[in-house]
Picture 1 (cartoon, helix red, strand yellow):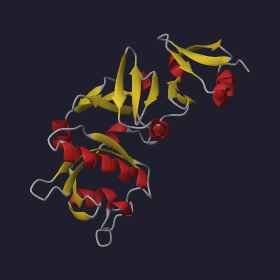
Picture 2 (cartoon, rainbow, N blue to C red; picture 1 turned 90 degrees about the vertical axis):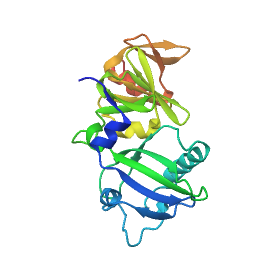
Picture 3 (tube, rainbow, N blue to C red; picture 1 turned 135 degrees about the vertical axis):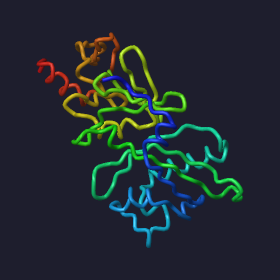
Picture 4 (cartoon, rainbow, N blue to C red; picture 1 turned 45 degrees about the vertical axis):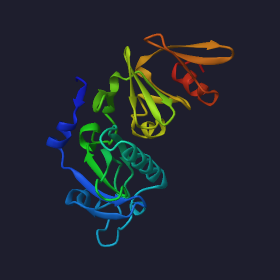
Length: 235
């Protein structure tokens, strides 16, 4: 399988656009039918839901706040983001979205545009098979089996694939929950490694390191050491 590039035009032409308008206090002003359909089984009742806090966690609201701040600073530019939404009655949904400032409204109304890309990124077991990373203003969908390892970088994650690396807006914790645990293991608070690319283990200063097939050294946390030694028949 080849990696796939998703452009903004592709999103507009392929997926139904979810639109919700809200103010800086997250009060919902209006929304379209697509939003109602996406969230109808996930705590969203058009008659009683009046604020984003009723369907989103505090962590998600913090991310929305950052998107609002970016919209204030530059309404015309800024990256779309990937969002994993943990629903109440089903597995997580995956959105590509962006928040825009609504012009002519005293700078206090915002438009959120959402595209549900869950079906093209996950399999029937809801594990990620295509992994989204930034490619300019677009998204490149990497084949998961070709990813060597993930590294946490602040609120983002670096994704190392063969001789290239990319940036993902997802946190390492979010990523870990959606990967196949038989193939990917969290070996350190800042690293997840693909076992397919583990060449060997080496010991340095009483600590073990993973050596990948591309000769990258990845640290193993002390509390993960026994797990990896058992995996490789060393304990």
